[in-house]
Length: 148
Image (cartoon, rainbow, N blue to C red; front, side, top):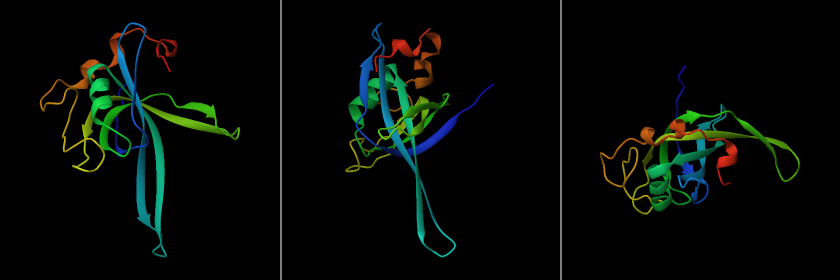
């Protein structure tokens, strides 16, 4: 089986980079994906869906270095099993989590810190290796291995 999700949105906060106990870099950030439309009576409407994005290895390092809150990105990845949690008011919420395979920086100059990148995979240079090579599929990891 195969599934893939493509998202375009803006970072809701600065990325957070950490390391697994074995020293593998992992960066996570929240991504706001908004849909805008006009209702039948012409009133503008908007709905925002939040995703938690996780990037691994060199992609994690690059994301941590170049992206900040507000940066616009395109993420191609795999949707993980949704997780439920309790918010501050005790309400049950759902976290939509995506493991990134490719991240393209879309922000123009002055829009977040991304600069004018069209970035696929890892490294700051165009043509760098695809980050799918960096996915943790070859590792036998559980949630306890991730330090957050």
